[in-house]
Image 1 (tube, rainbow over the protein chains, first blue to last red):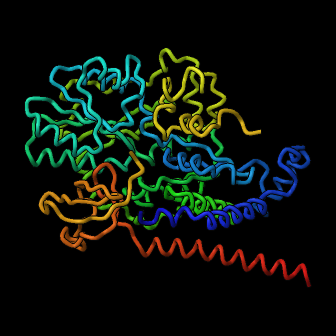
Image 2: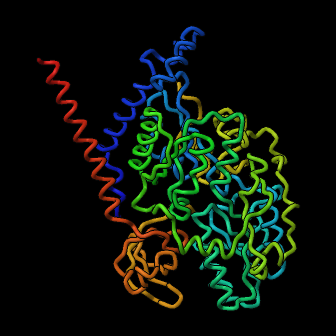
Image 3: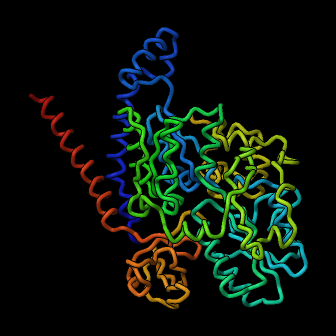
Length: 402
Length: 94
């Protein structure tokens, strides 16, 4: 397939890894990290760091997107990196950050008589406080997995006597598709189609992460396909207000390695910019038609909650009043405020929030790989293959590397 | 849901509703092309284009020039490295 093999070339990957090692060794003195923690060394290093950009603690780089987490694990990229670079897995998996109460709302809608509830496959097994959509289906609800929101629209056309609801989920990557589907339904005058809108926006989520006092990040790998829609400009605040360099990148191993090299190079040279490694897909200004559809249909919610992050301010999105006829919240009387931040009821031992914020590794959670596993996920990070717990489990990272 | 897959547009099915047939790794599927059509690229001109398909929507046209540029840069990095290695080896011998 076009530009897939080219971006998996092992020889090029090896060169990039060497370049990253070279940059990192220039930033860190040659003695091993653990021997450099004496107060004297600490002082002399802090003096030096202003001059030469040398450092004492490993660089922490967050890959925001779950797709990137997947690539890192699939190709074993972390094990190729120097010990002085630590990847922090971000919350960029829309299924993983969905509060349990929203899954309960989905189930409540699916249980209404005459409803066909349609969803992307990823959301089927996400646990709610009562049950998942898969369990609701087993209990007799008409829940259908679709590949595209357009498929949900086709189901609505074929079943005029049924109410068809599509679970609109995801960051900006999927927002144009649901917005355009709603607009198509509007053009056709379909009365039995609605969206249950749970979209979230990336820059606002990044801002929520950046204001977390526990985090100590040195830079971001930004999601390639979100950026394909929104462009590069919405990340300007990350470099301007928070002084963290950022590189937009794709999903092949060479994309990630090249982006890491660009990011470490920025840090080594004392630069702080938004750079775009993924220009073959991401135009600087984003996708005009997609953005127009988003702005036509959606507006910011005043207040929203994330599993693991709590209040994320204005990252949530809702359907504008002009299209209220296609809003499942209004159609089925689902009050958004009735879906508060969940305390992971019945899952008290889970450390999802800490893992999601990157301050704890999955293996530090007492339930990881035991009562919480991909067959019986308790926490959402174990549900989607993009979730960091599922990735750690699938690729055998069950304990800390020695 | 977020990864997407590259495919090639083979025909326009419905120019008014911007629907096209796209070949994705040998599988043909109806795809909405509203996001890649503009004044510069009317629907009819899209046949043969490589696009990235997400949940049934063509979301971006693959920029072949940019792809070539990225690959060239990576190749250069490899060549430069080989040259530097060679220089280092020569230096050791001198």
